Image 1 (cartoon, rainbow, N blue to C red):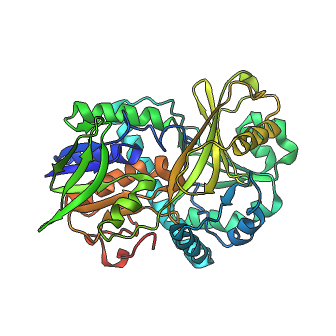
Image 2 (image 1 turned 120 degrees about the horizontal axis):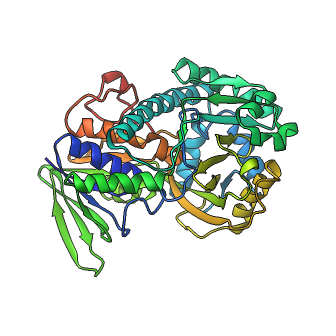
Length: 430
């Protein structure tokens, strides 16, 4: 079959790779000049199966209210006259029950474990290099209440197969000596030794090059204007090239991997996706004090920040702002990340040389992505990965390639696809 992949972020590129490996003719259409230049460009860098507790959890509603007017809050709702935002927010509240949270954690862990294994296999097969580190991820807590609240999610993750061990403050410093700079603030932690980190942008570009060498066709600087249906379902995509010339591309199947912009395109076909952009921020700093800089990837759970070492760069990323589709940098939020970093690691950086970035993460209320067949024949979904696009990319790409090919994915996950097991027939982000 000829399959067109719509979007060349990390999930679009992994989708293209696995589809091509399954023997399909594959074309990727992307509005940017190359792969991985939007949400995949400067994210937190973690392959974090252990980051499985969704934003929507029993403690979230009170936190959201407390953070509502704080410009530097970890999760900031900027209330707008936007029906999509309100619909998303109401479903977010419904996902905050203990039962829904446990269900979502199990699915996030299941997809994460599968995806991490697929990434490791792919890296070994292709010899990919992307400043990867396999030293695990250490979550540390500076609030007794947050540490106590983490116990139940950790129990569910362990039951699902995530290797996650609780640690004392001294254990945390032993694992990452740079935390000695803030030892007095740490009340506990958890360690997932099998988790990893790496540069998602470098990975995406490297795999895109391998895709092209394997025969995948790329159409860059090409805007996707819409999809057209025929008797057999979706049959064509309408595009415009860099010169503005409009044309059509036909294929047997289409896979929607357009992140936060998936909702608008799907809506034109009557497919409702509850995806809203969660604007995230990152700061990339040069290593200027190696003896005081972290080596192990870290997560500051109270402030919802992740720390990754990418060669001679330090990447700190996090926070989420629900404020429409603007990608304008908010310096208050950027500076809050630097301020927290300097508070934790006062001898690591002076803040000089900081490179700020923001991107729109395609969030669902449950934190579960849409993976599977849509209700419109010929249109498949691999979108809505939120903060875990890098973590879930390889597993999602392999799973959707199986589904498009008519095979059962080797994954226990609540797919949207009608080809999956009956007990899994539920909308994963509904």
